[in-house]
Length: 426
Image (tube, rainbow, N blue to C red):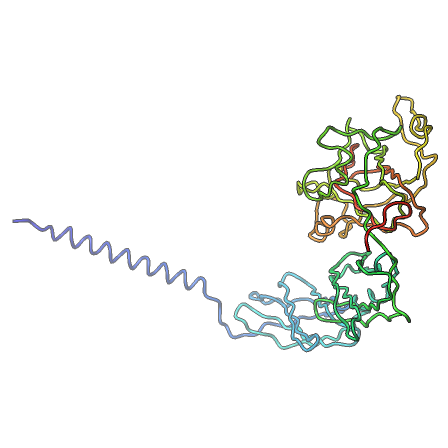
């Protein structure tokens, strides 16, 4: 007969019971430790309140109450019929409220403790100064341009806003573009219009659904200038380097990569000989053109290249209609080290010291989403209307984004009018 060890069995059962009791106690202790206190006593109120009115809001300074269980200080207010709150920790002595148009507003301040007890309210009056939507609206300038209009605006507070564009079609105003921006000096472009009068109006909106007025429509509307994209099928290399021109790195990074239509892959022109800055890139557009604008793309296949690496930060553009024998062989200036630098006799200055635009304004390797979105679409620049027409283009590389000596260009596109060459089909 099998012998049962009752002593061992009882001991095992006791062990299980004791372990269960221990775990239950531990859980209860853990639950107790994790519970919020419920003392039912409201905290003190914020004191020593002062107000600093700012554009579209206010900074409210205060001294928080000394309650040990204080959780936060809260501001409650209404913007455009919507109740909003702003909360700050008990270790902060100010909070910011934003989103107001001009006027007088009441802000309710409360202290809240860890038991969710709320103090008596303290009412604070604020008088925000001119809101960003109004300040930006008053700075908007609209200019007729090739194929559309160009807008410029100032945003001193770098507020996140939307510039809304509307076009009148058959008596109705239709939204045609939204420019999302926080740039201090902003620019927006409406393109693709024929040389016929068109009515546009613009307004500014912020994230609290505050709106500016609409811009006035001039009598007769806006008249876009006729503009075409300059066909790249006529572009070509010179077949030689002018004195002071940068050389190509190798057969994979030649000058004709500038017009091969590739704007995203690592398929660019790259200077050879660890040189480029202070030298030129020269090529033939194939026909005489009067430029309205152009875009230059950076090499961006590697994300770390954006606003960095050998991409151009500053450059100047020259143009001419004929390259003479002297320009080909005898121009240029040799320095004491035997280096030949470009000279520009026979060339017209089209644009001097062009700066690659960067919405954030940063001069570091920190790239914002707005920076990236902009540069992937190409860095666009207006060519001065008084600039002469030309066939040959020469780009003097002045500075790259890394501060190095090499230059590179991913792609370029040009728009304007054909002066002497094949006109595109209408």
